[in-house]
Length: 172
Length: 172
Image (tube, rainbow over the protein chains, first blue to last red):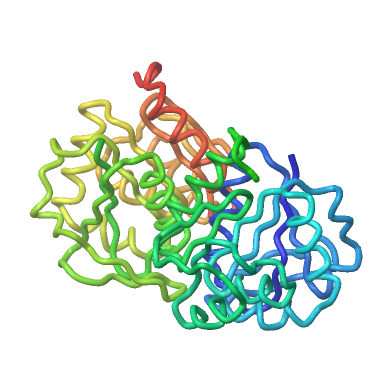
């Protein structure tokens, strides 16, 4: 299995690294894509190598999409290729895990109307305006879409993500 | 099951939070102990609440000990009560997970002579002087003792930790 993380500078460090390591724990290959190849750095100073640009991604190669939060999604959501990648995962009903501000990319991709989800409280009303059935819970699972609010929810996010990977029944 | 993390200010953030969340994922109760109760803050600015002081810990209440790295272990290793806690886990052959500079606490506790382990390369020679059979690997499992080198190894550290929790056979 292969997972793809879409992010950029000023990502929320734990929200990128927890799923990155957690999926690797499961033996899943994890790639990071950004506007440019090379190092991207989180708000807390951790760096990671972007393996490829958004343009270089063929989303058919990946089974799982992860959208971490931080300030990165306000940049990622402006990249049409990143939005196309997100749309592919929804169209194909593949697993998508989104934390915190990661939901901003889903709003711009136009893929979350009518979906149950959670997010960082500061963008709650944007999610609602985009048609999300918002729930204030540590993790919300709606078919292929798994969402959490902030780094303190990561244990629940990881648990539900891996549960769905091991038993994909119920991805609608 | 209950896990105990011993740390202090200037812990390595991911090395504390990855096992913290990973063990919570497994349904394990995780407590943090430090010199004083209240917030401790990592090198990268993440904070966590210390539930209790070292003096308040009864190690018999816990099944797993985690020693994250960063600059914290150079403080923790000076606290006799913290060393007594570490010795309890070795004497009782309970599971101990140690990353990076966390090994400094084990050196001061006098519990690692003749044990296979890894650590941050900067304290490698201190570990060897203390009698450790050092291995430069992402994770070393020696009975009850699981060690890793740095944050990039966390996926392997988590994998072996959870494997041992689910199947404790082989804890010597």
